[in-house]
Image (cartoon, rainbow, N blue to C red; front, side):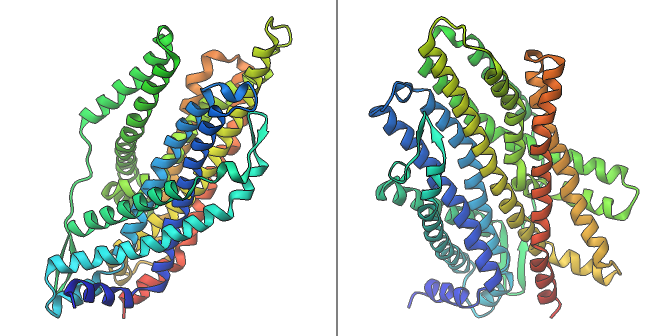
Length: 450
C-alpha cells in the first residue's frame, strides 16, 4: 500500500475529536454562507432576465448583490483557510511519530494535507446541508417588492459542485502552505518564524486605490453605468485585499503601544502577543471592521433618503422605484452585517483555538514560572477587547466622518444613535466568542502536561 495513504490513515485514526469537530464546523459555516451569497447573485440575475415588474428589469440590484458578495465571500474564504490550519495545529506529535518510524518529511507533509482535505470534504458536505436546510428562511425576506422563494435561492447542482470543489481546494492549499512553514523532525515540529511586517508601499497603494474609488464614483458620470460599476467593483476587491495588510499593520501598532504603555503584566503580555502575530487577530474580525465602516457610511445615507419627502416629485414611477431601491439597500446592508457578525464570531473562535494550540508551550512555561489562570485569562481578554474596540468602533466612526458633510448636526447625532448598537453588538459577540474556546484551551494545556 502507498506509504502516504498509510500515514494519512494513521493521522485520521489519531484525530483529536474536539479539534476535528471544531474544524468541520468552522468549514461548514463559511461554505454555507458562500453558497447562499452566490445563490443570491444568481437569483437577482435570473430576475433581471425574466422580470415580474419594472424594478426587476433594472441592473442595479445585480450590482449591489455583487458588491455584498465581495464583502462576504472574502472573509468566508479566509475563515475556511483558518479552519484548515486549525486541523494541522493539533497534529505536531503525530507528525513527529511518523517521522520517527521512518516516514520521509515530504510524505508526512502530504499525509497531513490529505487528512485536512478529508476533513474539508466533510465540512463542505455539512455546509451544503446547512445551506439546503436554511432555504425556507429566505422566504421571510423581500427584495424588489417580491418575497424570495426556495426555488429562487436554489443554485443548482453544478454551481454547488463548483463551489464545493473550490472550498476543498482552498483548504488543501492552506494546509499545504501551513506544513511548508514547519520543519517536521523525529524530535518534534518546529515552526519557521517570519516577521509579520508590512511595507509602506502597500500602505501607499491602499491610499491610491481608495482615492481611485472616490474618483471613479464622483467623476464617472460620463461613462456607461455598468462600466463605472464594474471598475468600482474591481477596485473594491483590490481594496478589500489591501485592507487585510493595512489592518495587520494597524494591529501591530496597537500591540506596540499596549506593550510600551503597559502598567500591568497582563497588558504587557497581551501587547507582546499582538505584536508577535497580528494577522491571526485581524483574521478574527477584520471583515467586521470593514463592514462597520460601510455601516457607519451607508446607514445614515439610507435613513436620510428614506426620510426625504418625494411626494412632490414630477415622475411618480421613478419616485416609487427610488423608494424600493432605498428599502432594498437597507435590507441588504442589514443582512450583510448580520451574516458578517456571525462569521466574525465563528472566525474569532477558530483563530483563538489555533492560538491556544500554537502557544501551548508558552502557556505551560508561564504556569511553571508561577502564572495563575486568572492572569492568563486577563491577558487573553485584553488581547481581544482593545483591538476590537479600536477596529470596530473606529470603522464605524470613520464611516460617519465620511458621511458627516451630508448631514446636519442632528443627523450626525442620529447616525451615532443608529450605529452605536451595531458597534456594541459586534464587540460583545467577538468577546463572547473568545470565551467559548476556553475549554479547548484547558484541554490542550492538560494534554501537553502529560
